[in-house]
Length: 370
Image (cartoon, rainbow, N blue to C red; front, side, top):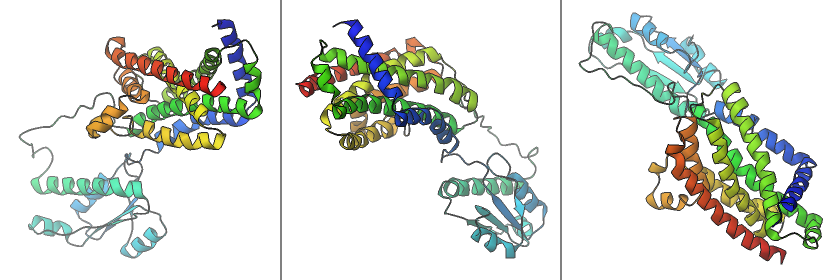
């Protein structure tokens, strides 16, 4: 193996990528706008939900309930009449409409169980699902405090102090941004290497390589380092500019350690891309294989759902996937400030999985060339 051949073949791959505008647009979108939009559109968090209140009681308790709905979960409530409630809901102006009936405070103090009507626009599925629970908790808390007395005179025997580590505001967008970067690294590295090989096969340049004094390992390594370098630079830009500057997500650990871990991750995923490209005959077939591979890697790796919540057999199978270990060390480094002494088992697992995938891809690539 000659490093010079690997270098020049890699430069050829970079020139081919530069002449492919569709791939360039995909890279720019995946590491900029896609990360930003996914972070801002996390369905688990309620943000600026529109709510209207019909206050027929006009009492101290009803005013206290209305003032409890505040940003960032809700916009300032709009006070409307009963006749406006249905029409505004039909027009989609509010997601929630709370109707406080007449004599509500009197019935509460008398020990009765008056009902408050909550109308929900269920077409806004994400806000309707989480927001109805928020409304119920707010109303219940305000009524309980009002009945028991003021906050100062009603001291509970035990006080629960909540300290949320690593994500004090409990902002789901922080995790969404990091998971989006991980997904982009996985997706782009597989696509770029696989598309580069299939593009050469469709253009007939594979035959040119066969008559040159280069080996299969040199051809494969050239695609790995060139496409991996592009994704690595793009991921570094995404973490520094998009995540830290644009989204204001604090990074606790070392970005350089994350980049080093991403390099090991790219060694495994680019080998996977070459393996899939040798199995697929055409670009449409390669796209179908991507759907079968990317979905499990992204859904079952622990980024969307904790691995502890999955069945044991799924956890064991996904421990063989590089994305599982990359998600663990990425969250440990970027959120918890973990160092090399903490994430070295995941780095070792990534190196072992990458070596195994490289060996399988090289074996399949030699068969493909022959």
